[in-house]
Length: 399
Image (cartoon, rainbow, N blue to C red; front, side, top):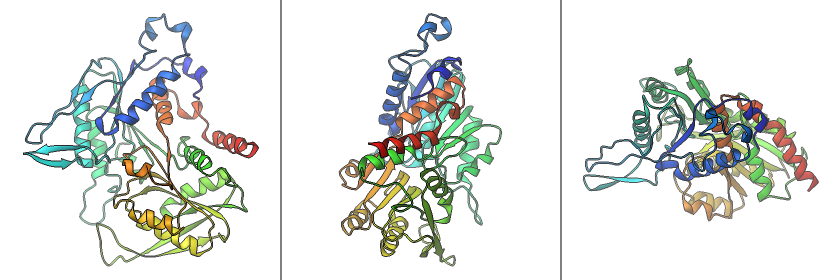
């Protein structure tokens, strides 16, 4: 629960409103419900003041739409007034389930389409809202964060474009490379890490909570559990995770063929391991995303070959761009036991039917972020993530 007393000591920046685009309307509704719950019992003695006349509401969501013309062009429409409001616009650029027609042809929405819709909604709000904030769980073009030879810098350009449109804060999760915030050094950019602590934000609490519920017999100690990073880029996640849980860690590093490019990247030749013996131990392998899953599954197989007992894959974004066939095969062959991912991006209904699939719900945490930003207070003072994990483990051991 949030620190209600701290919330009560700070005035809201402005009346709160949330515009959840169609791409993440389900997540937006969950977030809204949590904020409604947070505010039910707070600030009761101040509610008669004009300063808090709009504080307690049954719904903070506003209707926003981006209808399209037959040519495929679109426009952003807000269904209610947002004048003087602290507006949070939520978008999931990875939701490929939405479609639209162009001259009678059906198209699935791409990240580019979702980003354009985000700008349309921001444009509709400009000059009216007191402040515009963007919650984009998967940062648009975050994997194109640096230039190699003659390439575009899409992520940096997108951040600058949003700032130029009047966005005050951009809140994302587990940015592929948080240094991309250097593109907008004078503006608010927060990358929230569900897999490790960053700027006093959220550590792997949701992952551990989901894992312990799914595996109630899991022993969290050095003799029975190990944390593994699938590559050198995820090392910082694994280091924090292992320190908080008090277990050992290891790392795989990728040997790539830099003489060729396949699907936009240098193909992986082999995975090599550095770390302690994992024979007979359960292993949590942690990363920011599963795209096709090929790299993660290769690491899982190598860990089994090294004698790992059970393998739990934790990842912030489960994109599953090549479907679930390979994951089904590896689960059937005993190479993976659980795949834990968040609901920050679209997950097909098929995913929830998989026996190995576990969802770490992030909606309550997003609600805490919005509520804290609306009161203009730091998240670290509202929620101590490391303490939450320790209390979770204590309850688990005493159960």
